[in-house]
Amino acid sequence: MKKLALTVLPLVCIFLILPDLADAEGRGSSRLYRDRLEIGRALLEVQSTNWPSVLQHYTDDIEYHDPIVDIGGIESMSAFLAQLFANSPDLVTTIEQETLLDGIYSATWTMVGQFSGVPYEAKGISILEFRGRSRQVAYQRDYYTEGDIMTGIPDLDTAIEGFRTFYRCAVDPTFDCPFPSAPPETSAWGGPPVTAPPSDRIGGRGRSWIHLRRDRLEIARAVVEINASNWTAVLPYYADDVAYRDPIVEIDGIDTMTSFLGRLFASGPDLVTTVETESLVDGVYTATWTMTGSFGGVPFSAPGMSIVVFGEGERKVHYARDYYTEGDIMINVPELTEAVVGFRTFYRCAVDPTFECPFPPLDRVAALGTDETPSPADRETFVLGQNTPNPFNPATTISYRVPAGGGHVALRVYDVSGRHVTTLVDGFESAGRRTITWHGEDDTGQPVASGIYFYRLDAPEFSQVKKMILIE
Image (cartoon, rainbow, N blue to C red; front, side, top):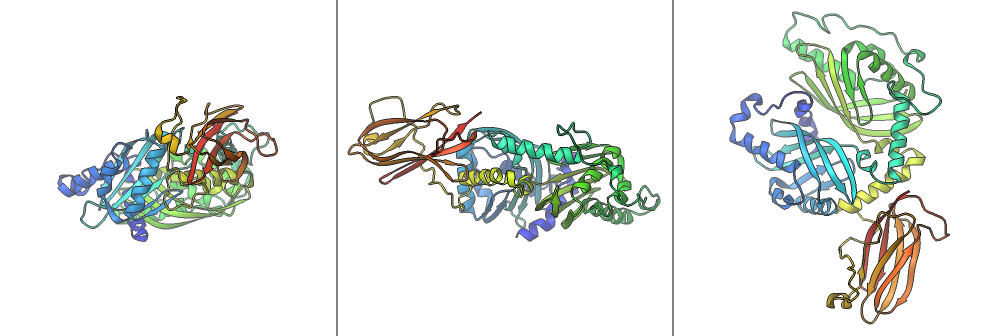
């Protein structure tokens, strides 16, 4: 299924800068077409108030992928959506551009809201594949960068902003780098001379649409698979007003594009991009790919997707966009590995029902009230309250209640990667309400870094976890 989906997936991404294609190929009047358009939109704009109602639109063997999780089957998909909206009840997705071609719905979107209390705004693209002539979706893939979420999390924001600064210093000629030494300009890198393609290949006249399509396919593939040995030879394929976008940089104009590419391949001379699937529709080339090599000495391998748009009737590229997640590069940087692994663990614990989370399941969300008189239910079980204040600095108070008869209680703090930080309580407690203050220190008495932490209460037949945030 995945291979089939990726084969046809690039056909549908022409919506990025073109008008809505709701009437493409005469399908606008088809009832099946209209229903699929409405269903695709509903699946992407799903919210906490209606997610169970959209499950009927997925096949039993639905396959879902995003930069962090892989879901297979309707039961796992149901659990995934339930956990996602339990942690993000206010998420709102707004579709910007959409299209539906040959049973493939695709859209660009902006998502705003909170994820486990962390506010964020992210841009992305989704591809949904309908099965046969049905109204059920068998494949869905979301492209976005996890950096858009990480940037709102204390401590992790430092990691993502540090990486983005490092990347822009290396490749973006428009960026005012805060570091004293910048990478070499294009002229300092000894690339091959620029060789203009034959005039009948770019901007040529009198050639048929078949030749135009063939030339565009070859040009676009060269633009995506550009590397250190040929990047100057590819420059004539770009229009003077070319616009390029990726998750970090925005480049406008051929002069800036030239400098950008020179810097990119000076920092990543062994980068190799391999196109896996490709398509060209109405002057818009799309491709999925894998890029391998190193950047700034950091080895990585990252999957992604590109859109290349030609001018009307032209063989010149006016717009190009790359989708990939920064985490695939960051995870190989020793100073950033812990941040990426920690975030991915945190995210998968929250939403992925197939993940063996290092924390117990968050199966009880019972906040401890201020009433000192316990309810009958409280007398029969342990209760863990939310820490206050939260976020906090420098200290926070955690409350819990021990039921009648008492019991052995262990209250421990963990970081986002599941490592034990400190033990606050470990021993027998009699019945009643208890409070304890954590001063943001580990077992050795050393202050811990700002960021997300979990505290877990373990007692006879009881285990519960809650999240707290230490800010600078």
